[in-house]
Image (cartoon, rainbow, N blue to C red; front, side, top):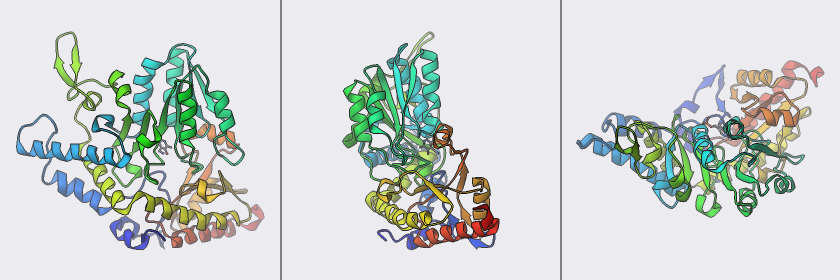
Length: 413
Ligand code: PMP
């Protein structure tokens, strides 16, 4: 293994517990990841115990320290994703908020009646609904790129869907259901060739692979802290300065203003013009600590570790009679997200049975109802691996699935 996951696990005490009389195997990392002690320490001891104060406004020592810590976190995030300047790194509540801000603010500028917004069938609801709302309010057209039989973006269809009328293309870098890694560069070229911007939902990519927004040359890139070892309630909206400069803030109030007159006001410079109100200071500091942790490991190592786990477990899962894996079966096209169903069993029953074996997986529509419809299923079970998972965890998943089959009786298959 490229990473020593067994040693890493000492940084994640939550993993060392018994659930339903079995040692916990946590495989719900696509929903949220566990947090290392370094992240919790930085938030609690580094900030709350020593420096707790509001940022930007105060001149007293604690306020200055809190501001330095908060802005240092922004700089860490900038470096982590390769953005040119911290002005392009906005703190939000998470991917959902980031996508909503882009749809509301950039959408307001860019979309006229009859224009097209292009997404795909594998998007998370948070990369669908903001565009639906925008399309409705502007009388624009929302179009979907289809998928190939093995669950990859259909590039031939992408070429058809992205036209001279397209103004915004918004695509997940990695699907939270299929685990498939999408060819963002190719979609970007199609979008840019038509004068459209490309927005990337990076909720499932930034935590799992090296991402460089300048090398990718994308217009916007969104992700969530809690899926990359950080706390909930903090996320990032990266945008190219030229776009962010043009855009109006979505929220108004304290912190984001320069001058407030009786009838109008002026905004601060980037990135603060978008960050109205007291920000999630502890959350940003926690995200900064998560970035430190990931950088110390090296994102290429994190990626290699997950690839190794997927290459190990996918063939074992595919060999189980009555088990269907959705999405590509080539491990190199995958992150550590594997979605499956067992013939004759509802995925909720499968997830409940796996929980009885101490194995935590997700079941449901995974906030991707259009994809479920496209796959012609009502729901699936999903196991998602991360840097602290081991081959033993993968074996436990396979054993638990076999035990589940046994429990429900072979007749069902
Ligand atoms: N997009 C994708 C691909 C996701 O997996 C998720 C989280 N499941 C989101 C967007 C939304 O992220 P959040 O709930 O952190 O805003």
